[in-house]
Image (cartoon, chains in turn green, blue):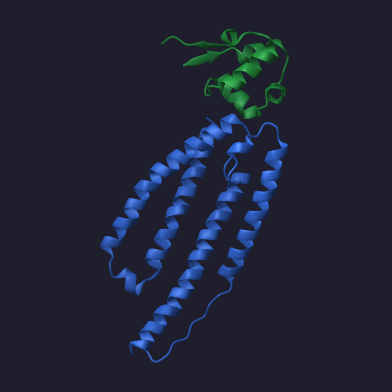
Length: 66
Length: 160
């Protein structure tokens, strides 16, 4: 499984889910699913998110140890 | 909403086509009965409604498909390469992934359903002569079943 810090970073940057969705080129439902952890993004989407938050992908998405 | 409309129109197309073919089969069957001397003549009423529904649904479907294509082309988030028909959501990468999953689920269940439908012919052989609608409507029920499974599977995946 992959966990992410999208919700935390979005709050830090004061973005709404809709604003983040527009910035990375997906729908708001995808951001909701990402934050819930029920959707694993493509590499392109992960790169777009890392660009918005100005952080390396590895600091936003990480493998969850079982 | 768009997906509900698309599935509804597809189903209306299948139902209206079945009704049109059914009317044709009834007439053909009556002619055969007459040729073989079972009847001396027959009367039949053919409703124009299945034809109206077919033409209306087909036109509406084509127009909606074209509008959806234009809207997908304009929307930067949408995946134009994945666009086939407007019941397939291509609004972003997750929608495309969900569509693929929903189509897989629908296909898997369709294979089981088709098997059951073929099997159903075995238990009611007389239906082919006395009730010619049976093979026709069971055939039409196969894509309708697939569409409904696809719609339900997609909606479940969308809100997961």
